Amino acid sequence: MGTGTNRNGLGGASLARADGLRIARVAPRKRVIAVSGASSFLGRNLVGLLESDDATAKIVVVDVQAPRTAGSKTRFYQLDLTQPAVDARVAEILGAEEVDTFVHLAFLSSPSHAGAWAHELESVGTMHVLNACREQRIQKFILRSQTALYGAHASNPNFLTESHAVRGLPHTQFLADKIDAEKETRKFAQSAPHACTTILRFAPVLGPTANNFLTRWLSRRFVPTVLGFDPLLQFVHEMDALAALKLAIARDVPGTFNVIGDGVLPVSTVVKLAGRTALPMPWTVLQQLTALGWSANAAEVPPSFLAYLRFLCVADGERAAAELGFRAAYTTREAVLDFGGALRLRDARLLQDAP
Image 1: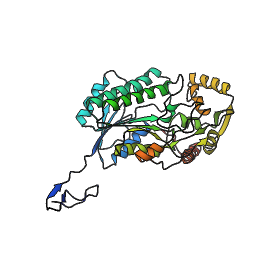
Image 2: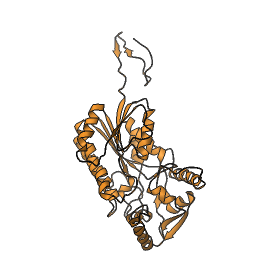
Image 3: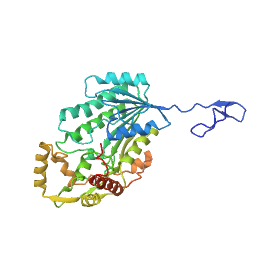
Image 4: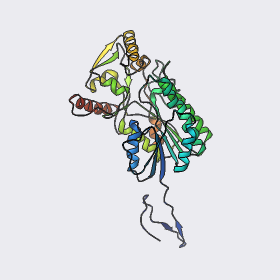
């Protein structure tokens, strides 16, 4: 028998026992990973990481377009999750490709005026995906979520744990659709005990190449804030967000986890570190201006999001550290500084805008 070392460092193709017999050792089966939302920021970068991962045999992308990071391991299926009965097609693909892990990232990073379409993509689309995963008995399901789903409320504690309710914000479909997706995922976990179901609630993602409503708000020369309020904010660096996804794929740890960078910063400090100037406005004035801007496609978010500039929404990350083994490499301050450095390069036209 061969005596080479396998990739776990456990010795060759067999083990010798004290009685002289040999036990065949079977190498761990490489994962076949399906990714939805692979054209999103996290999706395309995750596909790029998986392309170079020895533990990944194949990547199956189900999306409206292929990510530019797709390589020789990636199989692309053009699929629109908003279409009726798409779950049958997803199930067919999962079965044909022998997928064992599904990473569901098909969620908008910023609010959209196309509310009906967004609901079909995120809430109904998640149900389609879960139906397909249930039919094919997928072994692992990972859902991308957000700590913003807790909502910014005056009654929030200093740190929100995974046991706190996700209350969202009144009249905010962007959050409501994602809360629906979490509810359906928890139902899936109960009905499919054979599957390892993991929900990752990311703090707002910040970094040199991230592109979302938060980065656009901070990219303004004069950043609007609420006069008399300076709540603490919390971020996760884009590289740490990817590391958490990779960790959830590699380890079988079911449950819901807050994924955060260490530390918190007041809004005023975040604006300064980003190299911008805060523009405090009275609450009613900013609310009216934001409502007008949102109607005219000139504001990043609807006025309900201004609650995050008034009240606390900070998550506790201890469960992710203790059970998932996730510790962020970047603090909240470092994430802001990294973003601010890239912002200054863009201001000087030395760096292109993030795609």
